[in-house]
Structure formats: C-alpha cells, structure tokens
Image 1 (cartoon, rainbow, N blue to C red):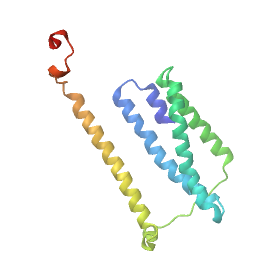
Image 2: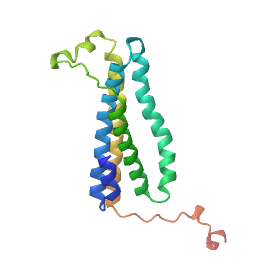
Image 3: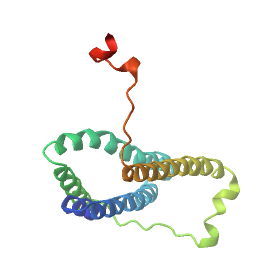
Length: 171
C-alpha cells in the first residue's frame, strides 16, 4: 500500500522507481505468509488445495487487475495506484477482522534443509529456482540494455533505394 501511494505522489523518476521496489518485496513476503497461513488453516487432507489457492488467487488478480487497472488508468495512471493502495487497505482490514489467529510452526536453521534430503522436494525446487533465476536474469539484462540504449543518441538510418517510395526512385 505504501509503495503504491508513494509511487502515485512521486514526482521524480528515482522516487517512483524506488517506490516500486516496496510492493515487489511486499508481494514476496505476503505470498509466503499467505501460503503458510493457508496450509496451517486447512485440514490435513486439503492442504494441497489451500496451497494451490494462493498462487491461483495471485494469477487471477493479475489477469483481472491488469485490464481493470488499464481501464481505470485512462483517467490518469495515479488513479490506478491509489485504487490498488485502497484495495490493499481493505485487504489488511478484512484480514485483521476475518482471519483467526494462526500460529505457524517454526523450524530451526539446521532443520530447514531437511526436506531436500527426501528427494521429492529437491527436483521441483531446482526447477523453480532455474525458472525464476532465468526470469530475474532476463529482466536484469533487459533493464541494463534499456539503460544503455537510453543514453546513446539515435543513429540516423540510411535511405535504402529499394524501399524509398519517392518520385525520384520511381523514375
């Protein structure tokens, strides 16, 4: 909520870019907390369904939120960010009122890698890490490329006679 609000009132590129980091970090934290909470609240036979519900909700929010945000943003992109911040505030209030207190189990640092010794968790985790690593790598390279090309002046493109449709080339 804070990151979207700061982005909406940001007046410089640096402030806006820095403010966009806040929702990104918040999304990572909320996704893991929501997954853990869903698994803790669900009965043992429904934990898989509860865990699938969280990314399903995120996917649905993205699929519906992008076109809706674009529609709202036609009046001004700031309005979209204020709308998202408002929805976030409603979600916080709704969670505080509607969710029961959940105590999540904790694991000591040496216990955390134990599931990887079973083998079942290792392969999906490696696939997930490879996909996200590639995504982050491509995103970073794209950003660096854009930053590099934004500083260079555009080169004039030479006219190609075969593509020049002026009267001189037709004669």
